[in-house]
Picture 1: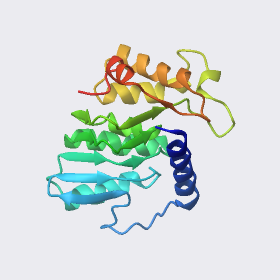
Picture 2: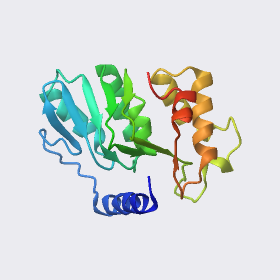
Picture 3: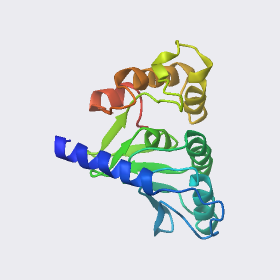
Picture 4: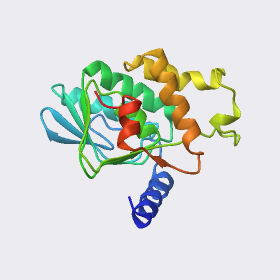
Length: 198
């Protein structure tokens, strides 16, 4: 990805964050960033926020045969807990997830990708990771290995099929490879090493 593309990606992330809002009165047929492709395939495109579990529940209620998800431009998540809740539901549904060649996913969207019972990607798709930062300005690397602050993500990876060893290896890779203010775009070798595809 060239410098201009990366700049546009982060501008999109900032725009989506500033314009997103949490709506507790979501209509039962509101799918948010999910959209229908066919009876078995759903597309997800956009920033993940606190409403994702409701959007997913609405979508799968109306489209119970869904077994495949295509991720497009998903720059991250503003709410890890909601993201993991929806992702665990997607995993229970038995949904395979695919990244087409123009897909760009980063941060929390990578966690959602890992929920796929099968995970595939086309050449050219981008997977970006970095450390998290909490509301007090603490970054993940401010906490020692094994600290309870790390366990939420590690437990999630185990829940979606990683071994404890593989979950810890991938998690600590993500928080050490780039600070919260940056993104590391994973190489093909890294994607294979940390078992992101299956």
